[in-house]
Image 1: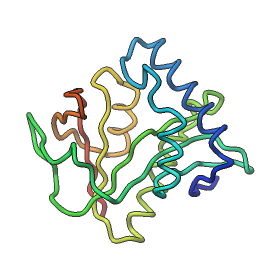
Image 2: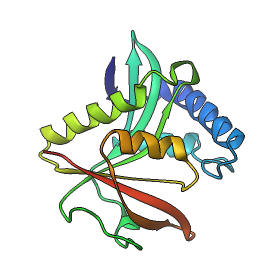
Image 3: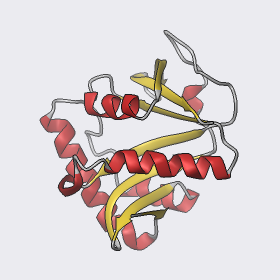
Image 4: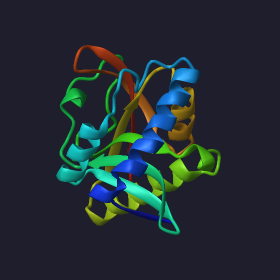
Length: 168
């Protein structure tokens, strides 16, 4: 399996995975990624900015993630807790795995590959947020040694819970 930067030709596969994730979240009654977000425009912008990655298995796209080293303005203020570090950090957004590969540790593989990218760039921390009802994402983060740090608010005062992992 290979984690690589997404290309324009990957958009169809990425959107298919996102649509599956949106349906899963709706089925689980989680108000995250509903109302048309993320959409193709968001993914195109991620690709243009160099944030979009896909995990491939034998050249088939099986997962998608956005990885940024540009900071995250909504992380500047954290409530009911604090970040573990004040250093430069990576931010993970929009991680999703195709439903046929769910339960096969694919998201953990992505997190490990992201750690490797961070080490190459001498980045010592990864931050991520999720919906408070998204228990499967929270389990994934805890399993991969991310620590709960507190609450952040996205634009529009949308509440999310925030996690961070320090990288040695």
